Image (cartoon, rainbow over all chains, first blue to last red):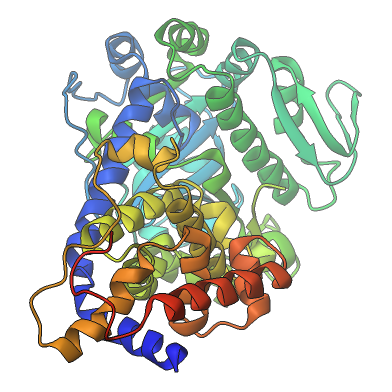
Length: 358
Length: 168
């Protein structure tokens, strides 16, 4: 029977199959080649607004990077040496009004976690009212200071130490963004699309932002990012809106052709001015560029544990100040996943804490 | 839980390579076909991983890549070399073995959709409906491919009359 002969012929030739290991090498090499080509043709992916701006014009960055954080500026190199393994970048949002005495509170604290696979970025939000122990303030071991005040006391350095203690992960880099800088960046990219699950009314400007997706200009974006009192879950919704904004910004940076175009990127950087400050730490400039090439806006995933455990996680100081308890099982599980680089699994098991692009 | 690209490659690469060898008849072309396909899979991984059966989607990509070979498709542009798809000449076996390898050699003379249909049924053991999905045609067309291909293999296959060696 011809069919049997055919089956036998196929089976016989299985020894022609090439070695998968060799083929795998060829695939990985091809992927590298393609990503280098993408860099040259100007289509880049992004991790976060602050890190992303590195990809275009390193020389221009010298201005923004010699900031209070004191970064060594590495200069340009041909190869993109991304440090291997999982990476954690601290992103702080500060609503300015800073004086030398008061550095301002960090209203937004996020750990950008890039798993070892380097194919996505998790924006892990830490609510600003999370109670922590701030060394040197409020008495040792009291664990009853709001984490946002760490920046007011000791700037990014102290905040970084506190976040590191809280989560147990080492932070590889830090980015500090002043809200005014975001407003200017928003306008420089021609507005950012943000999708809201429900209507938001601003208590500052009385403006009403409708549910659904709309394009926000700088002033509107700033207004939105500041809102929390009138939102159903207060700061938690503000966090979600902030994550949505970041994703929308990345989208504008890539689809708007900003990153690959040094002239446009320069404009955006100038708009940000000293409002965006970077400490590239152990990742370095070339590492950040390498990462930015691998991760697309669609692979940026928002995480926030307090979202649906709002009442469970609220505790009070003896003085009656309310804040979030970071020792709930959900949050400690999240931090463990950060340490173990198992956020993919954790996110799958806790879909309620995950916000991906709609 | 969604599979990562790396996990998918780890799991599926050996099977995809075997499939590609049966399609192309030659390990080098099979390797190129799989490599180029998986690079494109990596590009589109987010979308692909959200389909109900990524391995089916990827098999479809690979099969289309094979069928479009040497028609000015992305595959030949990327590969940039003019290797023929025909297999190397049959080695000098004893006659029995030579006859058995005849079938393998004759597969190379089939139109690619017909060969793909044969591989999908007689190597991958897929049902006709699944074959139709991979080839992007109707079940009737699949059955047409297979019966015509088998008829060609049968018609040429008489041990006494067929010479050993390369077809044509």
